[in-house]
Length: 182
Image (cartoon, rainbow, N blue to C red; front, side, top):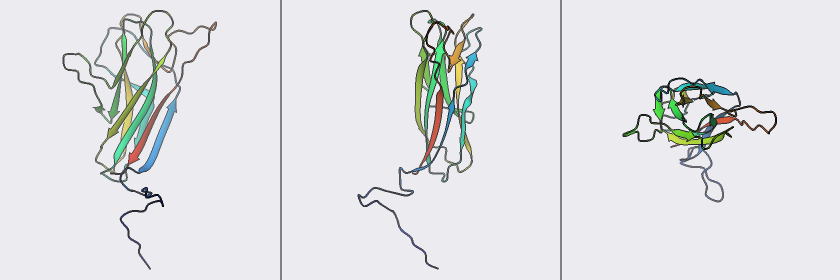
């Protein structure tokens, strides 16, 4: 039996082919168009709720691998007086948070409606390169925080109001994980 060993395999143009630094080793992805409503009530910018369809597991093939997380989350709010925040999590650890120095809440992404009336949803992008340093299964998920008080809920994948007299375009959300070789 023969064994072939090499430091790298390249295309004829000199580009890496297999398991070289920066190669994509695996991809997992999910699409969710479930319409979520996060209830109104006293504003509490410290409680983040699961978005059930935006959770994925990936098992890195090497502890040195990076995980590129890409998400596009369709959000909406019912009042221009309140915000909706998103956080990216690896397990119970929040990732890619903004600097909350002097503020109540640190988030990965946020949205505030402008104007009044039936608000159109917007899509918030999230991109983050993580280093989980493990070969065990890793869970990534996105959570939502509703800062609306009174009767102002936050929404994922839906309009703030439904009206059959005009076109509805609630949209959907995606979460994609890519293992990148180090």
